[in-house]
Image (tube, rainbow, N blue to C red):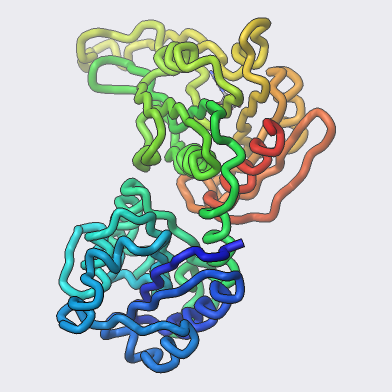
Length: 397
Ligand code: C5P
């Protein structure tokens, strides 16, 4: 599967570096060649000798190693691979990558490269949750970096939570996806995402708590499978995926028009949390406090974009997928919703506040079709996206 693939593996300094040794073995078992790079800190956790013995290759360690520069400059080293994998990726290397710093061999290679980059973060849960790391993560994703994990679990530091590096075989699976077939090549998939903002007046609006995380992850997974993606997004918290045709909108009416303009498509996935109602009496001037108390707002119903597209008699995308965010009787409500809207699938999830799903990084969904309802275990939104994208690929090919 990875026969003759050239992987530049950068190990940075974390206790998970020991798993990097196993990763080298697993990649080589599958036919890849592994060129290892160690940071100074990584050398505190694994020795250059064990890394080079497992890789069957010289270990690169120092930017200013003149022999290496004579043999192979860092620019060439960074480009002579088919994929760069950083595993483990510390909070520090993520920060350097996000900022474009180049103060050692690893960071310089990552800045100099035009090769795709995959990272497997590993760090203490507080470091992972820190706003700075989350900001860097968002930036790296927007730059096109593939992020594998981290997983939840017990950590070497005695804490529990997200921050454990993915297992070597999980990373290998992602590497295989990267080099794998792109079944959606030539297919156009439309994805809506994020909330809509419905103005009350020029400074106020009605909105909802959708972050756009699931729709964005799905668009990214579809792009990874080779699809051409039109991404119609309301004002989301997360940046849109690199490589998509992005159409930013604010209101449901704008979203409807953007969706209409983006058709035809081979599949359309409606992950946006569209406001059901807009303010019919929206003012073009800022509303003032008056003695009469609160101004009365009158509402008009927004068009149901999903139902409209699912019920098109001409030019209906062959696969139309909706999402259903429910807080009770999730499967029953979503099953009825699928039949009512006449879409092919509904991805149902429970967004009750205690699930932490809305705005969180995980999701637990049930995929509902005409034939059945399949509940998937709780997993990261990225994993939900990858599985759903694969299902879409299976349905279209
Ligand atoms: O009816 P409800 O809002 O629960 O349905 C959710 C599904 O319908 C989502 O896929 C959402 O994107 C879509 N929807 C839409 N237009 C609306 C309301 C919902 O496309 N006006």
